[in-house]
Length: 214
Length: 401
Image (cartoon, rainbow over the protein chains, first blue to last red):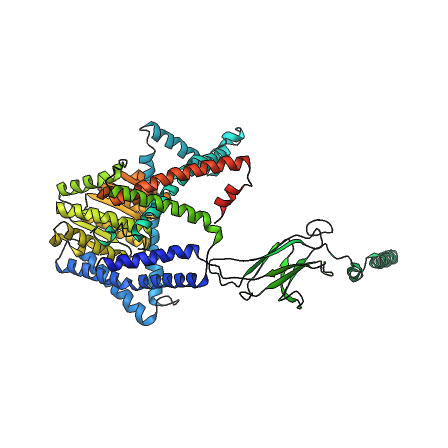
């Protein structure tokens, strides 16, 4: 029964959502909408599970003095501080301590992580564009054309050339044809993969996401 | 001298006043001109009203369409708006329904009573006169049980599901189904083996998608297989998650996998970790795990956004063997660049069948392949037919949504 009940729920909800796509009757659509809202509420409430896991994992780490246990103390302390300020004085109210800490600590830290992407892109591009094979050479040439074609310098460099070989126009051709063809090919394959997987899950053929095939 | 100047100025002032007065007399009286416009605009044509079917159909919407008055954008070009009326019977009085701007050719009546027969009237208005009213009816709103514009989707979906089920049955009966080699999936066991040899853990990142994302479900199916391999090899498996429900599901999947291979004691709940819902906080925390705990194999499977390269580049710098899989097309180039193997798009969804080699799952893969053949055939045919005649039934049928 431990396996059958989730499979039955999956089957019923999956079929109902399929029906909702083809049946426009307001009773069906409003019921489907209601179910989606339940899903959102359940997901939001599940944050408690996450908090529980976070406390347990870091508490064990501190207790067993595992490597890096100092970071665990910091994590738990910051979480406790945010809880302490968020509970009584609100979280999103302008001027509240929680909001101040969020805007002045968490947001800049996240922005810093995001900014690192520029350096990672540079190092990854260096490796990807090295002339090692015919394919890599092709990639390098296409990348140079697209990167220069997207900035004013590229336009300036080639404005006296015939229109078809001006870098911005060549960029458009690369993006609109070979790039788009590959993009759509992957997308369509993925869409069919999603449908096949969805069917396998609805019919209970695929059940390893429940923790085992049997 | 002063007197001369004064006289000249006075003369100029008198002349200016006289010119102004003449100009005032000569200017046509606009209100008089308005009242003189007694020519009504040309009436609208091709008026139609149809029951409107949307995604939440309660039978209370009727879609009215018409062709523009000849004086809207042409002719006198003086149409200001279109006035719409509604009546509950051919003999009943007309009630004002609404106004559509000039140039507009449709109006959605969202106040209809389901099942009531309505007549609709539309007239062009030029600011003074109404054109002759054009009427259409009766038409009633109905609650529909089928979205007719989605017939093509339904037919193709049924054909596809039929193919999957036929190949699944064939596979169950022992048919030999060929599935091409997917190097990325073969590399998973190799990567876990390498981690075992080095005595280091395996890191499995299921993406930052929620549990309702099909990529996350696909990732959990792969996690089940990876967990069985790590359980057999007795290699620690670390699964950091960005969503609490995914963490809960991952706990269940890994625990069951360890139990399935007879190693339930090998399961360590502290290795299934919830880190943060925030994208870059999660990325920072995973990077920290990579640098502190030094996993020898990093597996990224699921839905990834901008954090993909942050993770993959850090893993590369840490010297781990990396296998990634996602259907997020915009992130694939980053994974291809920074990882040793990448599962692209559909390969992520095929992983479970490929790794388990279970006939029933392989049947689904074959069904997908044949559907791809059918899709390519339909697209090629559609392109040829469209080039010959853009307004044909074949193209129209597949264009409906």
